[in-house]
Length: 192
Length: 64
Image (tube, chains in turn orange, brown):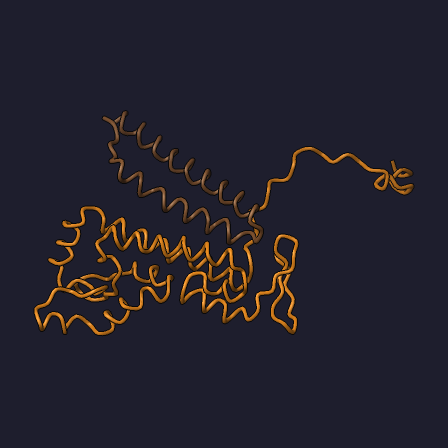
């Protein structure tokens, strides 16, 4: 596990055997949530910043396009309880329009007999059926892509806050280590 | 009976595999060569897992 220490310049952790300055880790985690990779950019970890930005946002955008821009919305009423939005919200600012549309409610578009706007939830189950029909399985696939993008960004937020996760522990070798000269001290030799 | 799957579905698997593998690799290391190594391992692990599931489903579809 990473060792951590506080210094005047920020929080220092040991990652891959070298010290890593996380600067203000709380701010970095918040920035990482707002825009994937922004927290790492703030910490001057530019390669990882670019990697996270491209990987997570491309997954999110691909998901949106596959679902014809309809798979990200906040809705918690009789039409649909959209629990998937909680995972999609991990991406941060890109889902802000959906949060605003969900907060505004659907009364406005229903009153005007309009079709739901950008990142707005369906007005009725009929709209939902239509979206599923028109995009074939793209609606489900897009939902999956955007959910995974949100989940991946949670890992990224943790990385910005605490440094790299510990890699999986390797299985211990079955071979017994050969005894060294130091092990065969006079005390152990006399007992045997 | 065999499991039929369109090639478009398989193409959708690739960007997700790349994104997940890179993020998993980069959240475990700082050095680029270690990130790439972990990415490769993750991609192989995910693909092996998916192929195993596919094989099980294929065998079940033959039996049923």
